[in-house]
Amino acid sequence: MSDGEVQLRVGTLYGVLDRLSADGLTVLDREEVRQGRLRRYYRLTDDGVAALDAEAERMAAGAGAAKRRIAEGRRAGTDAAPNSGAPPRPEPPTALGLAGGRA
Picture 1 (cartoon, rainbow, N blue to C red):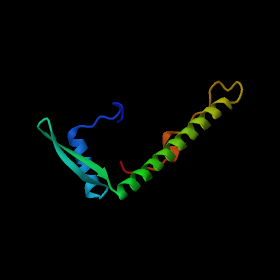
Picture 2: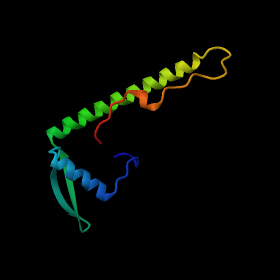
Picture 3: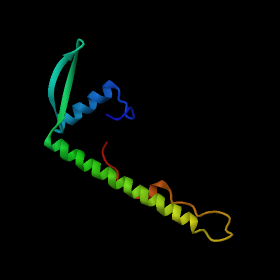
Picture 4: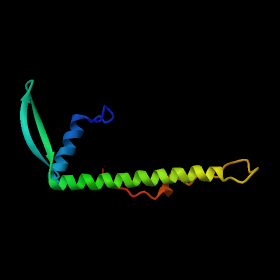
């Protein structure tokens, strides 16, 4: 689904699924045996869909804030005083004002 961009170890994946299920965000949908191995399929609950939507909105807002700060930094770099010899320093990353969230 991620075109190879996201790669999770089996232990990581099932640990996350266990936590999501414990939080009521996913439920086991079905199990089947394929090539002698048990496969489990999970689905999002209504609460899981709402949590995913809220997290996507939070991440989009953070990305938007980062893009605005990058654009401001580029504009500030063109506003350097003539003959100053150096562009203004951008603010440190901690000044982005992005809120943290749970993973």
